[in-house]
Amino acid sequence: MIKKYGGFYYVQDQHGQIFECRTRGKVKQDVLSGDRVLITESGPLKGAIEKVKDRLNQLDRPRVANVSLALVIMAQSEPIPSLMLLDRLLVSCQHHRIKPLIVLNKTDLDSNPASRAISLHYPSAGFIVIPASAETGEGIGDIQEQIIDEIAVLTGPSGAGKSSILNAVLQSHEAATQELSRRLRRGKHTTRHVELYPLKSGGWLVDTPGFSMLELPVMKRGELSGHYPEFAHYSGQCRFRNCLHYKENECGVRQALTEGQIIRSRYDNYVYMLEEILENERRYP
Image (cartoon, rainbow, N blue to C red; front, side, top):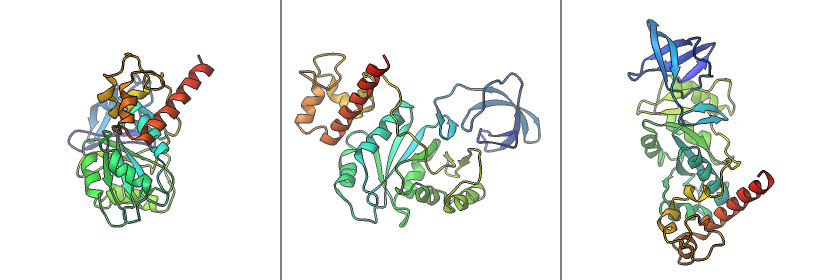
């Protein structure tokens, strides 16, 4: 389902046709943009939603289902990227079963130690990093390729250029996306519904310049390390199977840190988030 508007649900089928639908009485749950549904045709491009299929995930801001890709927009400069914020966003994406794609925007500006760390170290940590510039067009085609067959949202700090990147991705598309592009350039939304915009190259973009995942999702202490892909290669060398890679002796991850195989800022951010989780467990046992 790509949008709900005026009491109707608009569903795009596998051939790209869009059906205006109502729900059957047996469908009790809310139907969200992004939901995969079964419909029966009731007329030319008319139908009824019979069933909502199981969801991969559900976000609340915006209310959208089955998001599979997050474009994590960080500016190379203005503002200088926060590696702590980046790592928190990466953890949140993975916890919600969303593949994160780091977009390092504003490559037309001078770099700094934080942006160079993203370019140099995050690919080896298991993440795709695309250098991009909404001003010059660098990386926009690479972003479009990554969105094919995905439902994509954007996240990142204020000022990183989320709206600019979204507009740049949409500029080569016509019809429905033009209204969205104009609305974003005005700096605010004039619609209350969440809409998925299908791209000609494949995939969908959610019509919001950002969504919030600043708070860590609720998780157990042992889950956090699973959201650090670079730990996996070394965790098998830990003495204890339930090693938190925190204060334990004979920890393969901490040994890799000592040897420079894991970057210090990533590990320090891991410890900070782990201590936050441990504190939450003490407060809310």
